Length: 227
Ligand code: MN
Image (tube, rainbow, N blue to C red; front, side):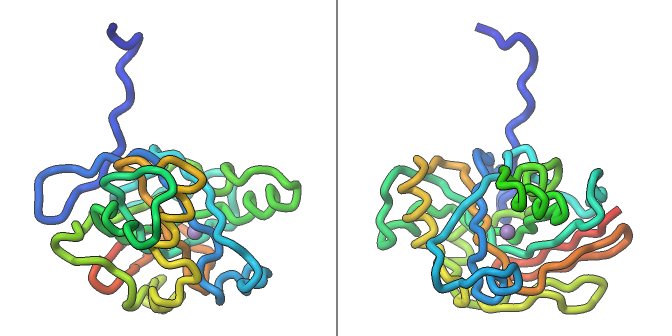
């Protein structure tokens, strides 16, 4: 049977070294996964198991000119390593988790921090702060066959040439295999799922006209101007 109207296209990302696209299914995000960032948000990093929230797949943004969103006065950057899955399942063991990874990318978990803070205070869900249009900028996917697996190396973000966030991937509280293992106990992971693996300390606001330039060793760069 035909659809009653044309479905919107599947969100996708380019794959480095090929003309094929990576089809995106869901976007999972890990909260407070670097100790210094947990502290700056007012939490004790030692007491918490990982927690997750989601962005709708159509929040994905692949481009260089990011429009400043409505309804916020506190539009924050969160620089993150993104993990792209080619397969999934449930209750995946950490030891086999990396076999499900297709590749890695550099992403930004853009946040309307004022709206998120309001929702937190009221004990409400975070979508208005986290899952709005174009809130998930992401660079192209670098396949594992080209770059290998990524577990150490620098992750940083400059705003207008000034270093705002910097850390080493090995500073993650929950590494990639354990993120996949933990998530797969809560959800059946699927091909095309992305995991935004958390942000280092130093998150902050950007204004129209500012340029965000991020880097993860071995996974490339992201270069976005807020317009
Ligand atoms: Mn984040």
